[in-house]
Length: 256
Image 1 (cartoon, rainbow, N blue to C red):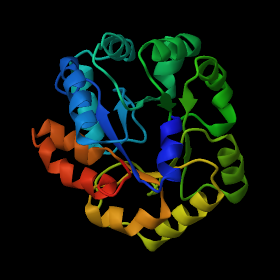
Image 2: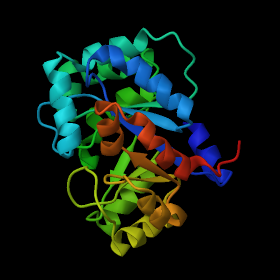
Image 3: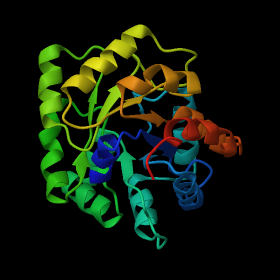
Image 4: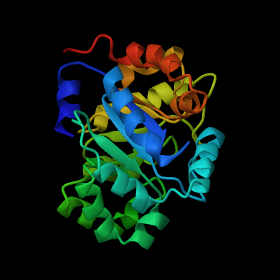
C-alpha cells in the first residue's frame, strides 16, 4: 500500500475499481482483475456477496444476489484468489461485512487474505470502537484495515479515525448507500477538503462516483476515487469498455 502514498507525493490521482466477486460466476473474477489492471487502475476492490449488504445500493446489491445464487462465498473467493498465477502489479482490497468475517473466524480470515495476496480490507459495518474484533489479526498478517469517514462523522470521531488510518481513508460522498448519482453537492467538496487537510494518508472519495463531472468537481480536494456501481453495471452489461474514459479522466496525467 506504500505505492498509494508515493502516488500522492508525486501529485498523481488514484482510481480504485470495485467489482463484485462471482457476479456472472466466480470464474469471471480473474479475467475482470486482469482486465482492470491492464486499464491502469491503481487498485481493485473485490466485494464479497452478502445477504444483508447495508451499505450497498441497488446495482451492487443485485450483483451480490446474483453471486450468492451462483453459490459464491467468502471462502470460495479467497481460495480462487489464492490460485492465481499471473503477475499482480496493483493492490487488491477485499470489501466484506463483519458477519461473514466473524463466521469465518477473524484470525483465519486475516491469514486467508494474506495467502490470497490481499493488501487491505474494508469492513463498512465494523464500528470504529469495535475494530479490535478484527484489527489485531489483520495487523499480524500485515494487511491494512481501511478506515471510513462520512458526512455525519463528528469532529472528535474524525480525529480518532484519522489518527488510526493506514493505506488510505475512504471518504463517503453521500449520506446513505452506494449507487450512481447525477450530482454531488458543494457540502461534499468542503467535507473532502476538511478530511484531506487533516489526514496523514491519502483520501479517496467513494459512493456515487460515476461521471467525469464528479471527478472534475472533487479532483483538487481528494487524492483518488473509488468507483463501484458504474463498473459493476458495465461488467454485467458487457460494456466495460464504456468505463475506460472515466479511468482515464482520473489517471491520464499521473506520473509514469
